[in-house]
Length: 338
Image 1 (cartoon, one colour):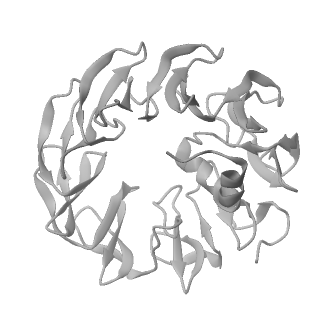
Image 2 (spheres, helix red, strand yellow):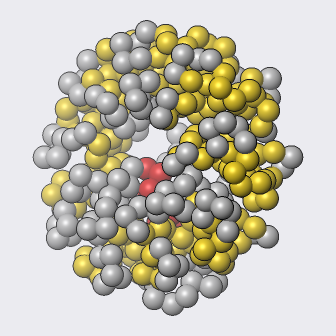
């Protein structure tokens, strides 16, 4: 298990702001946005004005009205005034989802409510956030199952890996094969794929014999496996890799935007479509394209994330910040050309 020390926080400091979306930054542009100022963390509003001074050692974004923030080596939760509502006392803390948040105490994970009380005691080596009333948890045996918001194991530990529920379906693994289960744990689609990326809008991305394709909710292929890699559909388009380059296909499997973009698993260099735009990388520079594949925000960043409520997180070579849909910087207020 990774030790969340100060050196660890320094190592991830450059991309921490951008990663906040991936750990549950389910916020809108009324929520304060985390920013790093002189090695301390504070929050700005959607216009770029500082609304919570930079006084924390580390911080994630707001979710359900509270944000994880660090004081020294310990994490707690602050409200939108910047006050610690739940004192800094945990080794690590993640965002709230469905009224509960995952926290690490004594190298074990549990769930607290918004008063800081443990609803599910810390007893798991690893956990995921709640989604559709259930959360995936890893037992001491290494196997994964699911608990409800009262901590009852409604689906006993039996999977080698388990992901969040979405549209009442979750991708899970047995051994090196994955399939899909419903909220009761019943297998909906058998364990027959070598990799799965979940199901969205009734369509799932799966890998067979080294190639990715797309199935419907019954497990039937609607797009035969022929791509080197693939992401789920968003706004009618899915990012896929063909001959080492990435493009976007429609639900018929035809390229709406031909393969031409670069991809890296080390950090986001391509995003799903959101609010009509997708992040994409050409010649090692990241920008945003429309659904015709044209860059409407020129590629000048190192990496970035999808737009949410007209704001996107982007990173240059030495700092991260936010832009609006026109590409104008919200924070910092320079051009972020570095």
